[in-house]
Length: 159
Image (cartoon, rainbow, N blue to C red; front, side, top):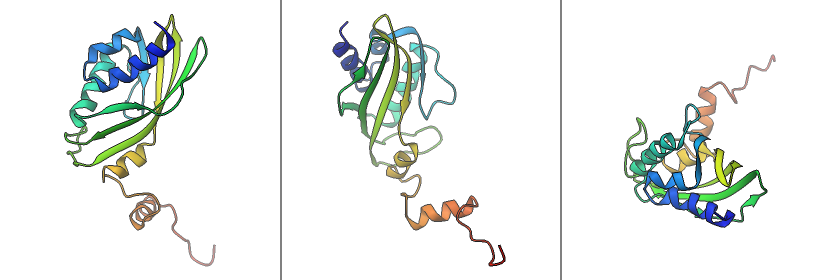
């Protein structure tokens, strides 16, 4: 499989709603993690289950290409944008009906032309703000949240 086929296959697996598609591009003993995984996922089957939860919450989810993949023989950085509309529950959170467009970078270690260790990086706070779960950055609501957590509170003049 060429590098181009590998990257296209990865994006297609996330967009295609067929958990079995990950097996074509991932090593069987895949190690995967992202901001929504509590623990690293240990194989392609666990990644497929994780993807199913995404597809249930975002039935129209798709991973779009946003730039060139930067890669050598052992590592790759795969940029993309995850788009979809939240139509189903996301864990304990009910559907919001709101659209999401989250930029993501997958950092991958390759083994024999397949993805072996993958870590996804994206701004979870921004995603939650787009869905209306958290207030947008810089707003009064965001400042109130910080104040509740003890940040941004001014101490008396004697300090």
